[in-house]
Length: 337
Image 1 (cartoon, rainbow, N blue to C red):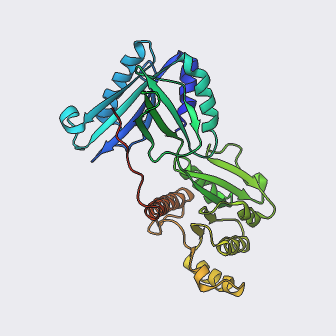
Image 2: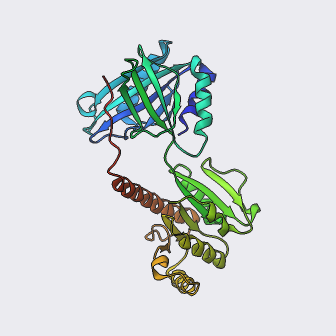
Image 3: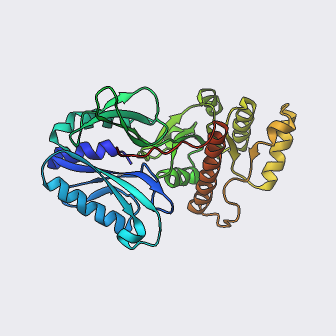
């Protein structure tokens, strides 16, 4: 969710809103730390902190605070079982920040930053229960939100990360399945560079996480792809799919190289790729068939759903591997004095 885009719109429309953030989540909770909502003065909202009684009560508190008419920042500790009667059993800390029209210029600036493809971080002092204007940080924090004591000023320092970490996916082919895959991935953590040699194949409107590229030599686009990207080929031509896979595998720097097809197509591709000089070690990294193969339907939307699930599982697994190699998952920081 583009948090600051919604905040800017709310401030222009009604002059106030609330930014709600799960500041800490321990045990079994509906959402992890960093989950956010934007609440409007009439009780409308964007995003979710997990639904249920926790969300309902948080919205009610946020609306009450908005109607008091002043900027503010508060933290609330909630035990889901004893406090709300929920069965989750965990504990969570909720941050509620009330923003007023005076924050519009800052919100619009952060909204423009949010429109970029990568996460960003901010810091701001909290003085007398009010968050001061945020400034951008060059380094990323180890958690989505933390509140620390600033020894220099004696105030609290609120450090936050906005935007989601997204896997770069290079999707080749704008046919029926390609179009369905783009829609299936729209709400998921992927930035999709969608490539086809036929510009007329692309729909006019695409989801906000998609960038269309028409190129007469689609495989050459891989030279611009970042390390760790996912590559998925499903073009109108098996020969072109083969060229894309050969180039992707030779790069030896992508975390996933998949091509749509059957076991027969895989066998033929392996033979042809070896004839091109690719070793068994390289060709072993080609995924074909792609997606959740237990889904038997050949409807484009069903195929796309299986592909989306498989890519999401692989993305999460790769992120955990990288976190473990880097010394463990990011440590959660306790909020409060």
